[in-house]
Length: 558
Image (cartoon, rainbow, N blue to C red; front, side, top):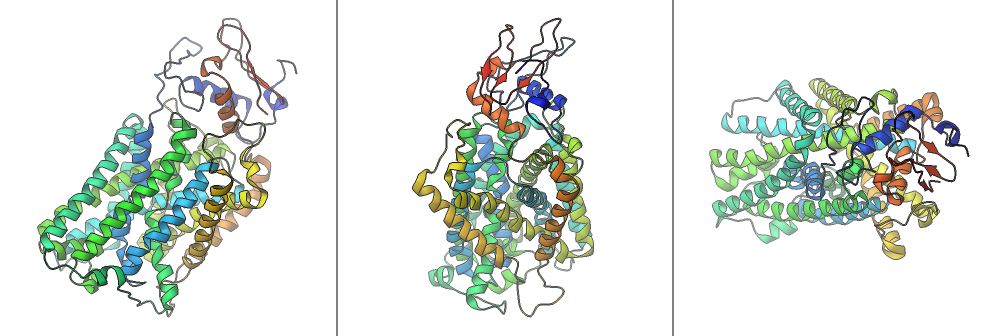
């Protein structure tokens, strides 16, 4: 094939993958913003000789672990949502519910870590919707934590929806600002997040146990007490109580959307996903056991206007000032979570738009010269604020959207894993691609796939149930309505736009990742010598990427 053949003819590119976008993507690799940028000293100059800023693949291993844990923030999420599990199983659901949630989510995390690549249209819509909805949880929970402090200190205070909405907006805009203007400090923030969260858990445990001593709850209460005030049969109620622990462990795939901003993504992404689930489950298990030993009145924990967590700490310390000081840890932890969720959800929007999966994909798939998907961040922020506006009119509507995030993400995880089970594990290792670094093997792989898939199917069905009986307009679980609405919208957009512009698995990211594994990054410079134009020839059986010394290097692409 001649070098003069245009990229569109050599390799059909649809949607936002025009020739200019392909060239720009390769140029960005030279600036250190994509999968090729494995050499931190690699630089290039623009047409006028102006050097680009230093390459920065900011998200190294510990910052990735911090990001993943900041998003999970498991002990805080589970503690704040105690009121979800206590009526649906009591302490047994709170403590022992973590075990199946941990096993199921770890199996799913291992399965997703082995896949970590493009997904189908419907799956992409569910994943994107789930992440955007999940980004709305941090501000909402933070609003409840802060208004809970006011309610504890001022018993006559009545929390209004607009009070929580203002706090919600502040957290959302703060996360947006950091993700647009604070790219270089995000890794430090992520590292601080895991330190702050785990340190806070340790401090709260020590203070609560020491101040509650010797008036602890019995071991029988903590590990065997069953409570069911939902109206559902005991078995159904206990499964509904799993929503608390499942919510606390949801979002482990965040780092899979950051592969272009991390070194050695084929190693760091799988490790981080699994490690985040392990840290989240273990820290939450220990924290909740200690918290339940420290409380004195479980009914007050369920009904207190201060919130379940603050009321528990107040009962343990018997001091409003002490409980409020301890509440500072989860309040700040939710700020870390808001930032992490904004990072992951905006990258999900950017990646799906880059595949042509969203309306106006050309807009949302753009990055600025600093490697920030500004339009995707702003779009995510607007959607989160819209969710907050819904909260002003109906708290059940927002709760449905937030709980839907768990269902959306579970479904998006399940689709590719189900395809692997049905079609066989050979689809994970196409002959045209190099052998993956992370693999579960022929025995552990199907086992993890089946366990994770079974857990997800079971919980997804039950999480669409109303939380209590009899069902009314106020306690109805509208998650099923939101789920159906997103499904209908995704089908309509597929008919109108997706079937023409959606790229799916055959995307630029796959080509770049392949080339990264087979060609030294120093050999993918664009041909910018004087008197020549930038050239990129992607061929059906090979790709010619001219190097700076005017010698072509050929690598197999497809």
